[in-house]
Picture 1 (cartoon, rainbow, N blue to C red):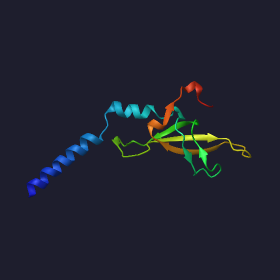
Picture 2: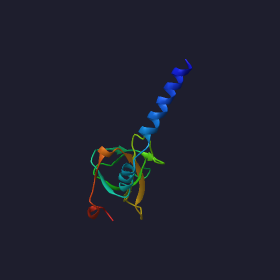
Picture 3: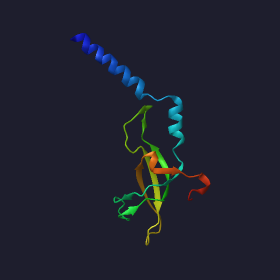
Picture 4: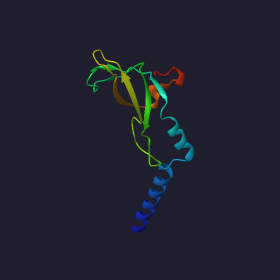
Length: 118
């Protein structure tokens, strides 16, 4: 019984080490996404922005601030790995309201940097 447990443990360790560690090219591709402008292409409503309840993010543009699919060189199980910052103007506010939302890559499209709002 000990050998079976030991073998299973060795197999488990090998799988965990080989599938969780990113190659340098994968890590570089993940880092290159940070700072890029995106446009939300799916109709998506959020209710957690206090100054704008029931906000539809469809068509809004923002900036990728963080990629949560990688942590310390290893893959994570983040369902919505892209953290995106948005700025919206609200009537009666002098400055834009900043908020964050998390997305999968199929929920947005990359926008050329010259088209991004500044």
